[in-house]
Length: 288
Length: 222
Image 1 (cartoon, each protein chain N blue to C red):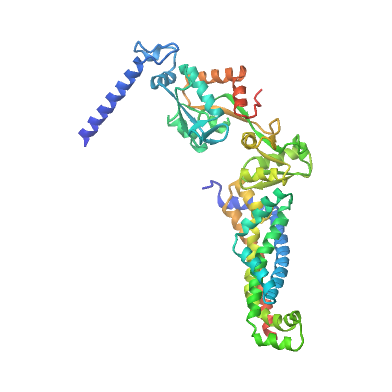
Image 2 (image 1 turned 30 degrees about the horizontal axis):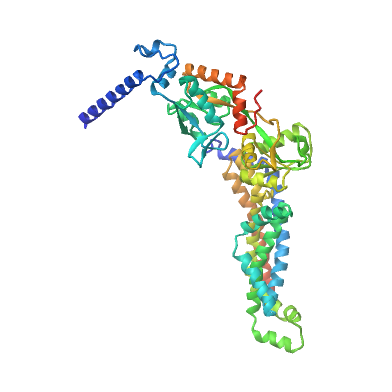
């Protein structure tokens, strides 16, 4: 048994070494290929980026069930969306090729463990930057600003939150939007708004569409998903009622990667690339 | 498992007890109104079932339809379906209408079997004395049938109160709705639904006791 273990470990090690050596000699590293001399720690890339380059692809954790951000397209079985395009922008910065990427699907609860265990290099999965998470992982600058928004019927007479005085607003049980709407009604001092809670998002949207509620209060990206299905009758009102800044999640202690991702995010926001992505995916762009 | 001690959880629930009381009154109102309509529908349909064959057939269709489809589906049909043809009823109206029609079907069966339990000779005797069909029912059959009808009728009343929890699924702001809202925000589950259960019991237990008492009174006259 012991001998077998030793033997197989040796085999694995030699394969791994061979793979690493193989990677080093392939001409894949187009932009400033420095790691041919055999001293990988001494070049311009930090250790994490060097590791990614050796592997030959960026491993990004994305959602596969959030419409417009990270979802599995049933037509071609590809994961697509705004978040996926941001991941590709990072791969392009590293490799000069946005297709050198592996997408791994993550659920909300798996996002931080996946980073910490090293299953993924970056998490781009509608993850809100907050202090609790900052204790466990690092975040890039905000790459997308989400928040609570109101979805209304086109021409229904509701153009701002104050118009909901004396009316009903649909929200989903257990989501933050119900309590947030009640708090905002108090803060903005308008009277008689009732929050009706529904078990699911489709039901809350249906209540708004059928006129039972004057608006549906949800995360704006969820509202945008429903608007994309039925753009002729419903619309998302401009402006956010709460702020949910999304950041790229990165394992603590990999500052080289964090710096690179921040460059991508800052440039994408500054030069309007990300705004174009938002338009491509029909999601509201609120980051100024 | 919630890290909050159970005693603190119970205190947190009791702090918002007025909210639960609001929901309780919605449940009481919906149940009382539905009970009234269900008893009226059930009595009329139950009595008419043994009148003419044509009316009887219509009554059968009603009973079979509402007894054999889920109450929640009936409510969703009214709640989400009717607006597509321009009719928007409030959650309360949808709740009361569907509960009344559903329970009314069951009540009518209770009434019908109660009437059928009275020997046929009594009906024939009353009719031969020149009583109309309705007079026969009113003065001869129904007073005797009441004793047979009451116990199963109690079950239907209690079922109606329990079924009123369907309001929670159509934003009805009833007792269960308030509990769902509170527990999904606070993650206090056990004390919330425990309290709600006690509040439902506070409605259903007196109801069954009341009918038990009525039963005893009727038995005296027998």
